[in-house]
Amino acid sequence: MEYHRTKDILYVKQVIGHKRIENTLKYVQLAEELFKNEIEFVSKIAKTEGEACVLIDAGFDFVCDFDGYKLFRKKKY
Image (cartoon, rainbow, N blue to C red; front, side, top):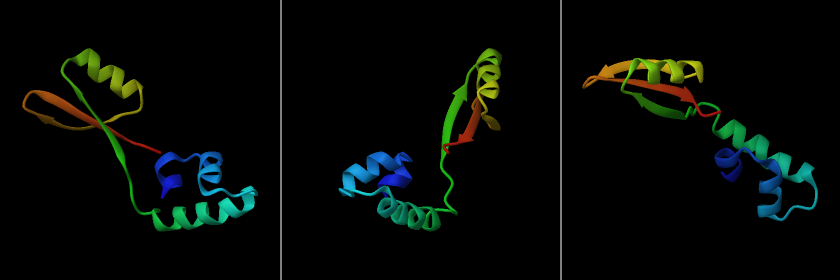
């Protein structure tokens, strides 16, 4: 679960207390299999055309207009 949240294998190795990275890799592979169908997004709102351009340049995708704002998102990983 911690690897899914952080994507930091060395941190997970330390938290679990493994001496060998190979042992931690077993858990990482399990986590990747468990969460492979879950997609998490970062969402942003653009109020102006300039803000929308900045988000698009940063890799965000336009989702929809809502109450005069433009909603964008991109995958976390």
